[in-house]
Length: 183
Image (tube, rainbow, N blue to C red; front, top):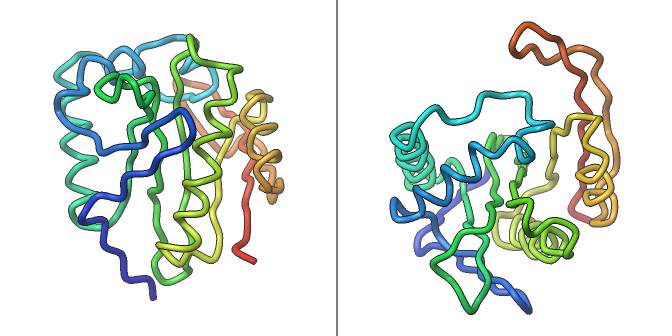
């Protein structure tokens, strides 16, 4: 079974970006991200109703991280490390199965600039080398073509397609599950 420890927090750097720990100081920018209609177009879940709801979500994430049940990185440019442009992380960690789910959000101002590919690669590497994961999955709305293409470009394969398995706001949605094995 996996034994995880996210302390000290695993900061990751890429050529342009810094992946750092979330803090309550990120609440305003996270709220902006979690209330952006473009970001939520294919997420099929409610946006945060208030800044207080976002702060509560941050506390929840930090608690999960402290309990080694999830890890969540803020994506920022190195030259502006305090400014969140997105996030990425692992949760739904199945310690007995050495598997975790990854997910990410990026502010639309930074779409189509190679940022998510730049951060997904080292995050996956961290999951395999440091967390000792056997597999990583991502659950995607099939209409989110860009996310599916990103995952495939980073070595993920479409593992499953579920018809109308996700219910939100009076509608059943399909889900595509992508995964990558640690080889």
